[in-house]
Structures are given as C-alpha cells and as structure tokens.
Length: 243
Length: 249
Image 1 (cartoon, one colour):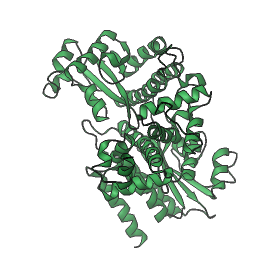
Image 2: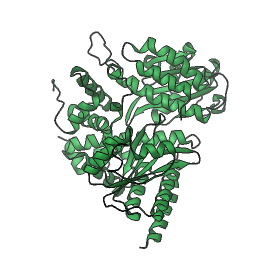
Image 3: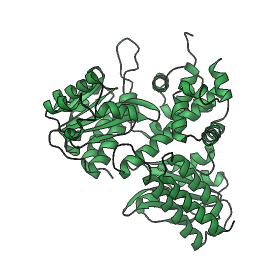
Image 4: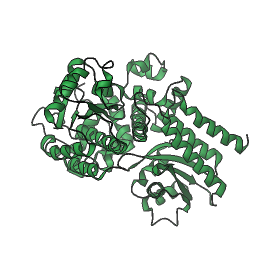
C-alpha cells in the first residue's frame, strides 16, 4: 500500500525519538516531502507556531502557514484538528468564502495546495500534520495513503517520543529505546484500555494518562504493553501521590 | 425466518449504511453477528489493515477478551494474515494440522475450544483491505454454499466501510479505513474509562456502551469519544445514572 519512499521515511522515523526530535527527523522530513509531492510539511501539537514541533521542506513557509492559521483562527489545519478528519485542499483560491481570513495570507506565502491531517490516537487529539505546495492540485491516491501513514506515525512519535516533563533535564523517554515506537506493543488494545483506566485513576486527560504509562514503563524498564496488561488485569493501579 | 430471508435482511442492512447516522464499527459488529447466524460457525470477527499493512481487530461477534486476543495473535502469523496478503480465502483449516504454520495462534485457538478456522479476504477490486475470520468449535467442513455466503458477507462489509460519509472530501478508501481503525481505538479507550469508573470488566463495559448507544439512538463512535474524554455531556445530557453518580463522587 505504501510507496517505497514512505517506507524509507517511516524507517527513519522509527529510529528517531531516542536522542532528540529535531535533528534525526530532518532527513526523514525531506524524504517525506518528496514522497508526497509537496514543498513542505509541518507537524505540530495543536495549531500555532508555539505548537510546531517539526517543520521541514520550505521551513519558513510551513511555520508561517501554521502561525497564520493560529492568528486568524481558521484554515485547513484548524478544521482538521477540530473535526478529526483530514482536510484536503487542492487550491486555496477556491475557498476564499470558506476561510476569508486565511486564503489571502496563504496566497501571499505562495501556497496554493494545503493538506491537513489530524494526528490522533483514538480520542486523543495530538496535533496536526500539514503539507503544502505552491502548485495547485490534489494528492493522488498513493500519496494520500502515504500521508495517512505518515500522520499516524508522527502522531505516535509526538506522543511517545515527547519529553515526560520532569521539569529537569527534559530527557526524552521514547519507546525508541526498546525497538522503536513502531513496536507491536504500542498498538495493542490493552494499551488503549489502560489509557482510559489510568485517566480515571489519576483524573487526568487521556494524553496525560498515556504519558504516565510510558514513564512508568521506562522507570521499570518494561515495555508499555506489559505495563498496560498489568493495569487491565488490575494488578497495577495508578495513584496520585499528591491528591 | 428462512435463511434466504435472513440473507436478504443482511443485504438490506448494508443498504442502510448510506444514512447519516451510520456507524462503521456498529455495522461491522452486525456483519460478524450475521456470520454466526447464517453460517455453521461459532464466532466471527473482522480485521482491517492500516496504511502499513498491519492487521487490527475491528469487530467480533462476541466482544470478549479471549476472542479478541485470538486476533491480536495473528499479527505475526495466522489465517487472516494469509488471506490478507494473498487475497485468497483460507477455508476449512484444521487448527491441529496447522500448528507449525501458525504456532501461537493455533495453540490459543484450540485452547479456547475451536477446531477449525476460515479467513475470507475483504476485497475491493484489486485491493485487499482486511479479512473476515470465522471459527468453528465442531469438526466438519464448511459447505461450499457457506463459503460463498461468507464471502458475500465479507464483500458486504467492504461496501459498508466505503459507505462512510466524510464531511468535506470524496470517499477515498484510505481515509475511510483510517477512520474505522481510529474509531476502534477510541472504543478501547472508552472501555477502559467505563470499566474503571463503574468497576466492571472491559467486556461488560463494551456492552454498556453499545446498549446505551442503541437505546439513545447515538452513533457508537460518537458516544465512545465522549465517554473516553469524560466530557460533561455524558453525565448530564445522556442521563446515565451510574456515570452521573460516579461524576458526583
């Protein structure tokens, strides 16, 4: 189903997250842009320049495009994040009525095609992956499949590779240390079930619950699937140390 | 009701997928249930492939952990993987005879009490998007007629997946598969939330979700999202006594 190029991109991403999100992602990023036939791609937690974690290709444009949407509060990325479905725009010129605040700004950046994919893990909204091109035209079926695979991978990477926030040295605790974020453990139903259970146990969001599961797994030097199995079997309960 | 009448019902159900409140996961559950009703099988389930070719369980005739586990075990080797990759049906596969071919799966399936399995590819022209898995607890081959009916039901499932409406763009197979798979993840998260909240099993949690969605005419995926996120609309608007009580604790 995937193009060979995107398989290579995903292999590159699989190695990332261990030592830093920025540098390792750049070769993957450039390859991704080529595979999708676009000028640039950005991935962010939510919409807006503060949320942009990685941007590549025509980097300045990707960031400016994100910032524009954040400022005017409208655009393909905003809609994708809100609606939970991809928003595919072959030519922004045809959508002046839909996004009057966004389209002129996009045209000024010489962007005509924009494809935004929500990054989700079930009900967890991680952010948005946005691809843009100066030449108008749709993503063809093969490119769309590639983009969806990339969006899924980046979503998992952003959540599983993100710093756990100890407030200290910002160490990244990706599953990358144990065979890559793409390991089979990440996708097991038990991991999702445990996420739900822990979110209730700690009274936190699903995203936070998943982060706490990961942190626990890392601290115990176990895979997340193993920890999830313990939670689901009720052998392990998460308690808030500071209620 | 004769079998022919039941078959007609199954196809009418598929046609009903073109309405606005259609929920793909609920639909796939209906297909799985229909398989058990119409064929000489004891359990059925559907697996869909993600963009990377990994199969994921999406719906089963019985939502219990043991059966779902039999699907998870097929990620490395199993009849569904074979049917998915080859596009050719796997029919009347005796589990004992296939111990070497599918070591972990065959062992677990036999331990659950099954004797033979079948996997029918979910096909759309040249593309295979997943597989329909059928399990039998009694020995004896599935008849040719049953295999043909099973394949027809598999094809019905594929049509249903394609019939999902998306808000702003043309129906493309890739996005629809992604939606279905993500809906399933949301349901798993919601199961966890409910199980913890009400101190019930994950299997029971699924039944609660499903019953509540049906009773209140809600899309299963929408309800699952609200439950998973523990949005306020659940306790108040939907008047679910146990959840409301838990919220006020």
